[in-house]
Image (cartoon, rainbow, N blue to C red; front, side):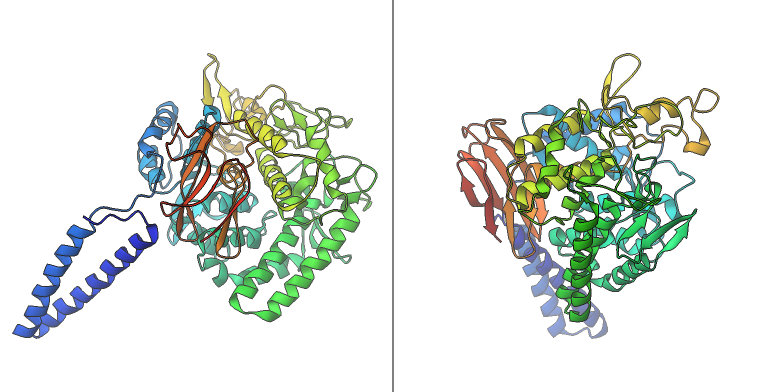
Length: 572
C-alpha cells in the first residue's frame, strides 16, 4: 500500500477522485443515452481503475504527526460532564469531540493548567457557532441579550472571533460570518477592526472571502469617517483627523478616562487602513492601495502626536469634554502595538515598564484595566455589573498579550523579555477558573474579574440581581458563562508557541517560552496556507524521540531544527 504523510499529496488525491467521479457521472449519463459497446467498455475500464485507486490510496493522510488526539479526549469528557448546558447552538456538547478533532490543532505541554485552558477555550468557542438561514455566525453571549442585534450578534468582539477562529481547519464558519457582517449585520455597532481581522484570517487560510469583501471594507471605513451621533456622543472622524467614540461603544464602559478620542478606536482604524491597502494590492486595485496607505500614514502620525504623554511615557485618551489628555494610564494604552503602529527606536517601548509593576497594571489574577495607583481605581460590587475602572477584562488582556508578542517579535528593545509575556500568559490561563460553594474548581470564562481574588464580579452580582436570582432583563441565567469576548487559543498558537504568519510563502516560528522553563512542548496539526504544521521542542529528546531541540515539520517532513528555542524561518 502507498502511504502519504504529505498533506499536499493527499489533497491531490482527493481532487483526482473528485475529477474522476465527475467523469464517471458524465460517462454514465452518456452510456444511458447511447448504450453501445464502446461506452460500455469505457465504463468497465473506469470502474476497474477506480477500484484499484481506492485500494491504493485508502489510507488517509495523517493530520497529526506527533500527538494522538485521543490522549486529550478526557478534557472534553470532563468539560461535558461538569457542564450545565443551558443554551445549545450548532455544535452541542455530545458532538463537541467530533467537531474539535476535525478542526483544531492539538497541544501538549508540562503546565497542565495551560493545557486544560487551551482545550477549554476551544470547547467554549464551538458553543458560539450559530447556524442561520444563510450560513453561520459567531455569538458573544450564549443566551439572547436585548442589546444584541440580528441572530444575537454583537460586533464588539467580532475581531477576536476572527483571530481565534482562523486556526480552525474549516473555513465554512468564518467565511459565512464575514459575509454576514456586510449583508445583514451592523459592523459599526461597536468598535470592530474588521479589515485587520480579515487580513489576519487571510494570511493563515488564503481564503478569497477577504479579497472579495474589499468594496465592503472600503465602504465601512468611509462610513466611519463620516461619523454619526449616538446618545449625544459623536462617533467617527473629527476635523483634526482623529476618531472619537464613547467608552461603552469601545467595549470599555465606565472607564476613568471616559469617552473621546481613544487610543483603541484610532489604532483599530489605523490597522484597518493598513489592511485595506494590502488587500487592494493583492487584488490589483492601485488607487485604493494608494488612498489607504496615505490614510494609514496620516493617522499614525496623529496618534503619535496626540495620544503620547511624554511625561509618563504612555498612550492616553483625549477627553471628549476638553480634548486634553486624561490623567490616568489605562490598559488600552497598549493597543497601538496590537496593530504595530508605534515606530521603532523612538522611546515608545518605555510604556511597557508598567506591565511589570504591581502598583500599576500587574495583579495576582492578571492585568488591571486601570492604573492601580490612580485615586479613581476601584473594585466594587455596586452600580453597573461591568466596570472597566479596575477589574481584569479578558477582552483587553488578550489584546495586550498580542500587542506584547508583537513588541517582542517586531521591535528591538530592552524593556521587556519573553519572561514578562510568559508570566502574564500563565496568569491569564490560571484566571480561567470558578470555585463553587463546595470549594470545587472548574474551568471557566466569564466577564470581569476581581484582580486580587479571582472572583467573577458580574456573575457574583447577577445571580442575585432580581429577587435573589438572575434577571431576564440582564440576559438571564449564567449570562456570562462561556463568554466569547476575547482570544486565548490565538495567544497560545501565534504568540506563546510563535506561529508568526507571513505575507509571503514562508513561516516564522518564534516561541515566547523562556529558556529552561519547559523541557518539552508540541503543537500539532496547525493549518497554515494549505500546509500542515507541527512545532515541537524536546530538550533531551526523550519525550517525542525525534531528536533534541526545536523542530518544525511541514506536511510531516522536518523542515527546520535548532538545538535551542529561538526564531526559525521556514520557506514553504
